[in-house]
Amino acid sequence: QPQQQQQRRASSKRKATTQHHATDGDPRAIKRRKPNHSTSTSSSEIPQIETVGKDEFNAVPKYVKGRLTQNRLNDGIIEFNQSLSAKYRILTMHPSKMQKMHYDLHEQYTKQETSETKGCYWLNYDDFKDSNLFTFDQTGKAMFNVMRHLKRIKMISGKQPKYIVLT
Image 1 (cartoon, rainbow, N blue to C red):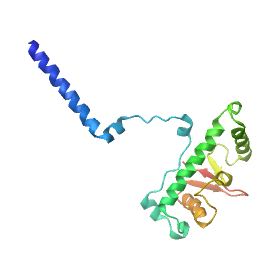
Image 2 (cartoon, helix red, strand yellow):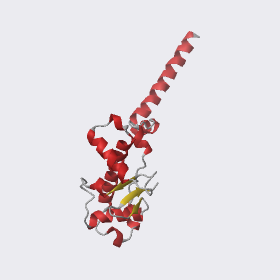
Image 3 (cartoon, one colour):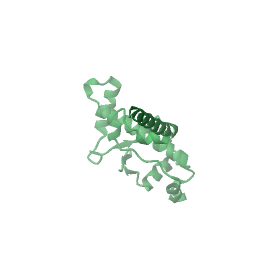
Image 4 (cartoon, rainbow, N blue to C red):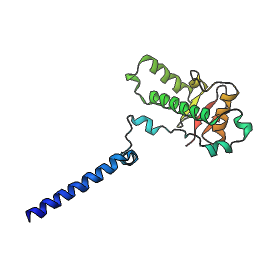
C-alpha cells in the first residue's frame, strides 16, 4: 500500500510537470492568462482611438485620403493617442503637486475648454505643434479627414479647430 501511494504521487507530479511545460513552451498561452495590469490608472480611463485596418482604410474614398498611406495614418493615430494621454495626465494631476511647466499647461488647457468640449476628451492644433507626423500640409490634413470620415474624431471648427475623440 505505501508503494501504491508513492506511485500515485510520482504520477501526479509527472502530470503537473508535463502540464507546466506545455504552457511554458507556448508563450501565447501564458500571455492569455496574464491579467492586463496597467501601470497608470489615468491612461485606462482616457479613450484611445483604434488603429485602422486594411479593409477599413481601403473603404475610404481616394479623394479623402489623397496620398496618405495606412502606415502613416496608424502612426499618426498612435501619436494622437500619446498626445491625448499626456494632456489628460496633466489635467488629472493636482495643481499643488505640479511643476511650473505642467501648471502653465494645466491653466492653458482649462482656458481653452468651452461648453462644447466640456466632459469630452479633445485636442486642438496647439497640441500638435511639436508633432513630426501631423504637419499642416495636404497629407497632414488628410489624416484628420480620414479619422473624421471613419468616425474616430469629430471636429469643432473655429479659429483653432478642436478634435473630440468619439468613443
